[in-house]
Image (cartoon, rainbow over all chains, first blue to last red; front, side):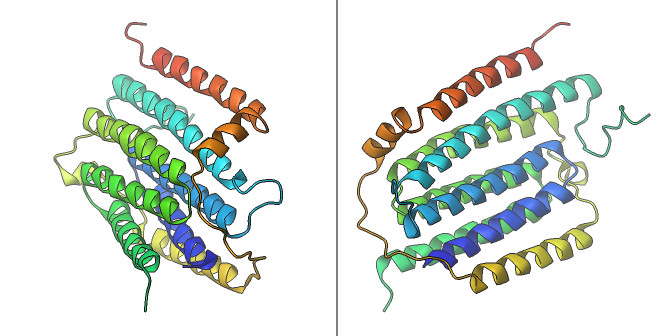
Length: 103
Length: 165
């Protein structure tokens, strides 16, 4: 369980998020993919903070992870509000069906 | 002879990757959302193994308790979850799978061939006090910016789902 072990797990998680992101039709499922990718990035930051810490502080990577978690929470709230509002107006949230802007 | 941390590392790895595969390929969106809970929980376990006790609790509270409940809530409100025909479709599954696998192999090769400047990890210590000190000293500007961003997210989500016009 060295640095490469954690990085490999994080790479698998990122790839799963990417697969969800580009293959799902449902907007909320796409949001789940984004959450997985953000989690993988945060895990990378914490692993680097543990195994190759910066000179200034041991905890810089963990601070970054805290910020990533906060950003993901804000992003999830706004994206879900958009999804609910789209569903209210168009009665569907399939990403392939929402083509009103297409001329 | 494996120590206890290695045992937990492999346990969390199998848990996160196995349930993550279920999230990615399940036909039912609600099941995906519930399975995502366990993935997030496993990542909190990784944070504990990496010496981030505060971060693990934040992960459980914010992700498993907040974001995932919101995702389940949104799933129940918007999609026809009872029928797998419309719940969680994916398109071009084979192509996406091949692309994802290629990307993963690339990442793993890069990770395993790079020479990382390793240090011997120090002793694990409680991090809450130091994180609080860093947030209010060195990182006070990002802290303020992100609190402003949270305020903007609250107001914008309220405006977006407002009843009426």
